[in-house]
Amino acid sequence: MDQQSSSSISGDRPYNNLLRRLSASDYALIAPQLEMSEEAAGELIYNPGDDVETVHFPCGPSLASYLITNEDGRDVETILVGREGAIGGIVSQGHLPAYSRITVKFGGPFARLRVGTLEAAKLKSATLRNLFARYADCMLAQVFQSIACNAIHTIEQRTAKWIISAMDRTDSDLVPLTHEQLATMLGVGRSYASRVVQTFKAERVLETRRGALLVRDYEALKSRACLCNDSVKAHFEEVLTGVYPSEETEGA
Image (cartoon, rainbow, N blue to C red; front, side, top):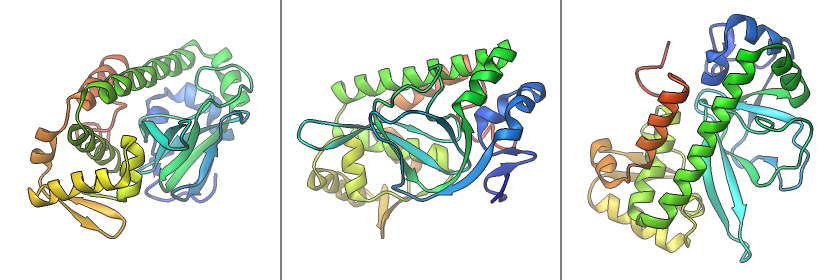
């Protein structure tokens, strides 16, 4: 593997909690074929219809986003995936087309693995196969929760939720998120997203920086968020303990 750095490698493995959860014998089945790369924010991973040939594992603070394009041309974000997970080829066998557009939300290190290599490893190990099946269940839970959240929660609640979700995965109070990106995540116009941010600024919950949001009062922000993040975390803990980023699991 090349381009390894302290932010992308933890011990002898990429800094991805799903890969770190693998047993030594299971990890050995895929380790020789793992490759590291640095991806920039906004970089395209898959377009709808693309053959999914590679699994991407965000490492460290890297984040990827699943986007659905509506008939009016607007993109709506469905879920974020950070170091707790992987993108592409998790459930399918063989090269099947991508359904959504997947882009890099926050740039950084990614580990990559050919889908065929992962499928061959699953055939050799029931425990490896079970782990990725469990992760697929957690990803589906995120999608279900996102649908419910968009249907019943206010823009303010969803804004706070998305910011906290990004903070969980980046371990930083400074979230590299523009008003336009936030609007995409929420599926609303930029002016609406800006008004919500201005409200949070007036309440001294956060401040704006060039191309970023600085959270000043995490507890106040959390009190304004819906409980969707907590529901997703709870499901991860039940199905894949220690994989979803948290202070308790860092450095484990």
